[in-house]
Length: 336
Image 1 (spheres, rainbow, N blue to C red):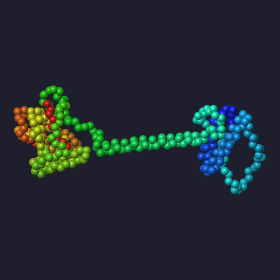
Image 2 (image 1 turned 135 degrees about the vertical axis):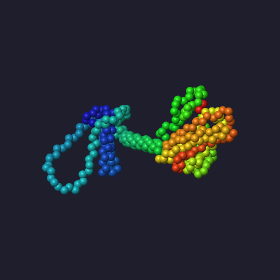
Image 3 (image 1 turned 45 degrees about the horizontal axis):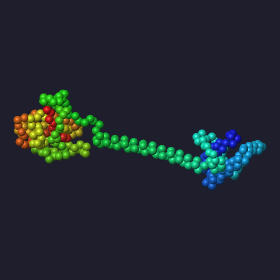
Image 4 (image 1 turned 30 degrees about the horizontal axis):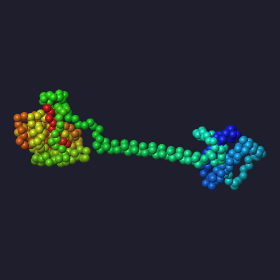
């Protein structure tokens, strides 16, 4: 108070708030005091503020502090003391850099600095910091859960990092509107695929001799594992009469998606029997354990109509070693 204009009530109120805040921090830091002792010291500070206000309103100034009496210096003497020394609390003025400037037309009183409001503000700041920390924790936890979910999707194969399978091409596709037959291995960018076989429906599959056919795979990809112990042991995939009627007089491409067992390679043979519409010869393909597409081209005659359905026949191992092939799908497309 000796360093400020005590006649200004706003300045006095800022000094009271600063002193009260410093006093509260001192009480919080002193764990040796109980609640009763803290309340007693708060009352003493209130009494001091009340006394100062009465003195200012009566005389317009504050009496200078009484100088401390001069105490004769004594040499230190070592002795055993049983007196307990209580910690002292400094309630002097401390600069409050962030204290808002208060303007009030009401006379300053001992309770006008609102210690309850100060405590409420400190409580709000603490709660705000806790909420901010909780928000950061939730964001980090959500990011971790998302990363683990994506990792699981990739590991399970639901998300395939490889590009989708595209039928191989050995040349440029035919120009749109051209009826020129495509070369072996070429697929038209236009037109729709017609499904001949899908592992979800095995009613159109039959075996000959000692050949076997069993469904395998998982929820991501299913396949039909065929096995041909001998040359005549073939697995037939029926091509319906309705499909052949759509293909009559057209140049077509059959697409067989297949692979061998893990770590094995085999050579399969593919032949066709379309009745009055002829066959497609006998094709041989080297099959690896990577899913690939094997193409068979067939030009159907225009002057004949199918009297019944046909079949695509596959022998999984022409070396007769009994190696198997996994058939993932068979489809056909009109290429002109």
